[in-house]
Image 1 (cartoon, rainbow, N blue to C red):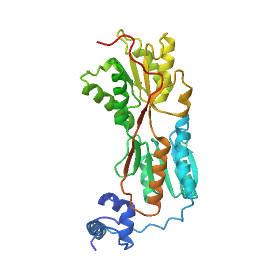
Image 2: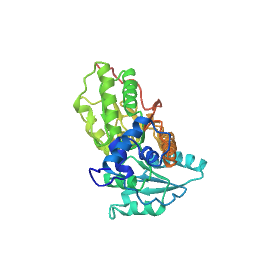
Image 3: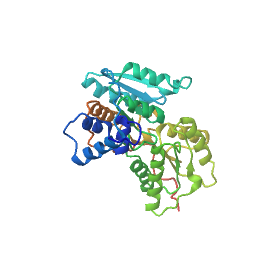
Image 4: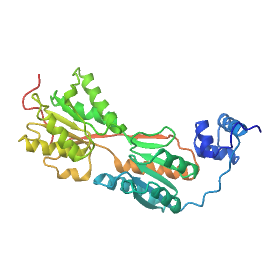
Length: 339
């Protein structure tokens, strides 16, 4: 063997070959369930670079590590329900981490994970660094991203139909007769936010309605951000007759802005949210929203993680679950038809 560089680990070989670490492990260990083409490619990489066998990882515990970028509101509760349902069926425990508490000691969380030796990690929305991804891969700890902000191609993920949700929300308002439809986005860094905005733009474009940049409010997926953006939008000389808030929290911010300006929902302003979180049932009037199936997404991510933990291939590394419109009392035809 003439290695062109220092010997590579399973994770490094997998990245070069464009396959999973499980596939490389099967080749290294002589297992049969790998295509001849893939086997040849991996064996050629091993011939050229060499293979550095890592110290065998300790036997994992019956534990799933669930990581949030922040533990606030209903969102983490709905995710945890879905993870716990699958974990319970497989007699696994769920450990929950909040990365927002790790700013003073960036390595503390990862050190804790290695001590706990979980069967795998589910990271929700965002928060893990590239270095943390790489360290988990080197230790052969399976990782699945749930509702990721911007998923790397090499890591399996589960998300919702965000583009279709944005399209459906905007179409619903247009079918009621609205044409001055504003949107309050989430952070630009979030894939879900960009996809919902694209769905909104597509719906307008398909109806021949130009996108007015003034009607695009920048938000942050927080109630305060929705309030600030809606306050600006509702003070425009030609204010919108409807607002699509790209999550339920921002929709509540819109409710507060409308009340401060003496506007009634839905008489003066229609509002659509996104998520359909349980607490939204207490909004007055009840909020029309796009249901994002968070428990089902979490259950799917957990099932994928367990497949990887068993050393098996996933049938698909990207899973997207459908969203649906839930019509309640916050939307109605505009008081006076838009031209």
